[in-house]
Amino acid sequence: MIGKLNHVAIVVPDLATAATLYSDTLGASISRPIPLPEHGVTTIFVELENTKIELLEPLGDSSPIAKFLADNPTGGMHHLCYEVDDILKARDKLIACGSRVLGDGKPKNGAHGKPVLFLHPKDFCGTLIELEQT
Ligand code: CO
Image (cartoon, rainbow, N blue to C red; front, side, top):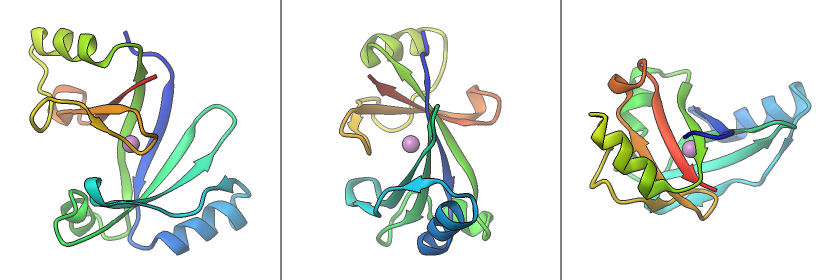
């Protein structure tokens, strides 16, 4: 059911520092910072040949990644995003298998303007999973 790894997301305490690390030290090509108020994050994409890294910094007072950063002050890996052809079909199958979909279970528009859903980390080997419709 899952297809390609779309991205790995890393929460960082300071986006500018992380951007410099990825562009200058690691020599990767990166996007400009993109504020996503409806997700409570600002993101920079690191473009790799086979996938992307999403650097995430909290945006606003009720950012969903604020607690993660409080628990992991130097940042850390936050989620993996897998591509699926049909997000509603994938969701229904996962629910039928007993997996928990976060929030109201309705796909929201993600950072790439495509529908996304998040799956409970306790149901997936301790890893928060994002599904993105291709
Ligand atoms: Co993501």
